[in-house]
Image 1 (tube, rainbow, N blue to C red):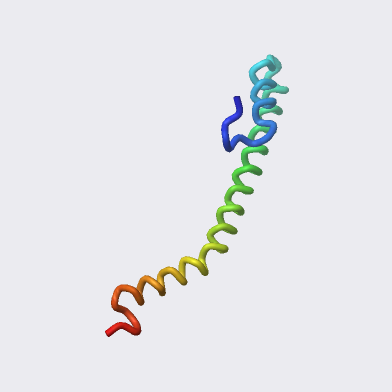
Image 2: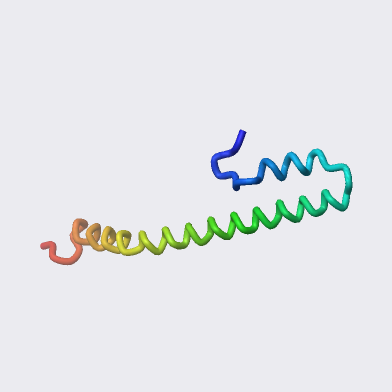
Length: 76
């Protein structure tokens, strides 16, 4: 069963690693697993940064609106 945020190909690499008996080939599979995880984590970090950047203008608008509603600028 795949986990919700599991990188594509992860399960196949896990199966290969579990079945491999040659230590040199196992080391190669583990290297592939590490590369896949590094790529996936990097992609997730970029995605999170892009989401944060896209939400920043909305957050600023909301903060300004909240200030006005709490007796800030323009309230008597």
